[in-house]
Amino acid sequence: MSRVTLKHLSRSFGPVVAVRDLSLEIPDGTLLCLLGPSGSGKTTTLRLIAGLERPDGGEVWLDDDEITGLEPRDRHVGVMFQGYALYPQMSVLDNIAYPLKVRGTPRGERDIRVAEVARLLEIDGLLGRGVQQISGGQQQRVALARAIVQRPRLFLLDEPISNLDAVLRSTMRAEIRRLQKMLGATTVVVSHDQLDALAMADLIAIMKDGVVQQLGTPDEVYDRPSNTFVARFIGEPQMNLLPATIERSDGQLGVRALGHRLAVTEAVSGPLSAATRPDVTVGVRPRAVRIHRSAGEGRVVAAVYLAAPEGSRVIYQFQIEGERLTVESEPELRLNEGEEVHLELRPETLHFFAPGSDGGARIA
Image (cartoon, rainbow, N blue to C red; front, side, top):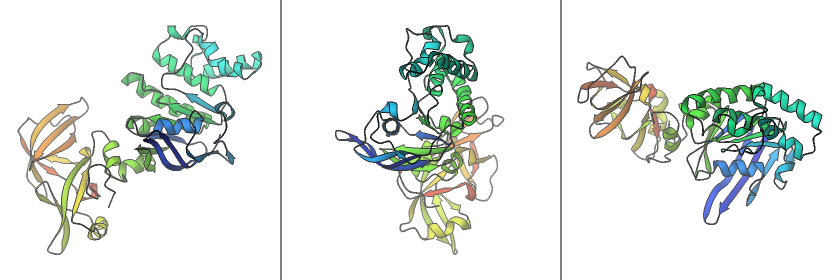
């Protein structure tokens, strides 16, 4: 497969900037997920790599070959579109074989390669059927087979499982990951769903307004989000972001949030001390907050505002000093609306950002 390098890519549509000075490298054999909300530039980036869009500036490289000016058919990439783009009048076999046919691959070789990829994806029993006679999940496998059969240098998948139901999506996340590792294929996947990215990707590039906000492994973007946009976009339920103020008491640094003083670790004391202004944003994951029925040092009194059981967990919203705090709990703990409890926000679980709810940079 191939290493992909994007150098200062830009693309605008009239006054709308879709991709802004984007540079990143995708190592050989890596599955990169371009993740972001609608309009963030992720699909335009994929189309620039595929050659379906031409950049206003910048370069696209595969290994040591610049392919910026090449036609899509000359780039040796396999593309799977969100709507699968299957030919309804053709059989499953003919859909898979079509890209080989238009390139003039001999019939015997076409048949061998189609049979191989059909067995790999466990659709060899469907080859004689029309694509309108098979399920959505099976159509998804046919579209994947059509991309794989070309033996491309690079796979590009645009929202490959967004049309599937929740149960099948979970299955296909694992299937795409398995196939990608089996083939050793450098792959770029576009998704708006952070669960897709966390489950499938080696690297995640989180995009907003045509700019990569953070590039990292799933653990890196979850554990150390680069700014408040990433902090809210990665993780479900979303990270709580709370206005806070840095303060000192008896020579000890802390922050005041939710009407209480919260302790901080030594590791973050330095960066907080160096902050140029006293106001910060504190982030805390819902699953990091501990619920207690009794008071204790550093615990915050809170009243249950809303309880939402979800089978394997319960999502609570607590009312504290005019703020709402979302907390994830084990299903065994059942609290009633209006009930008062005590919440523990442990110092080692807190994140600190520059003030601002949509892009404040990480401090510690």
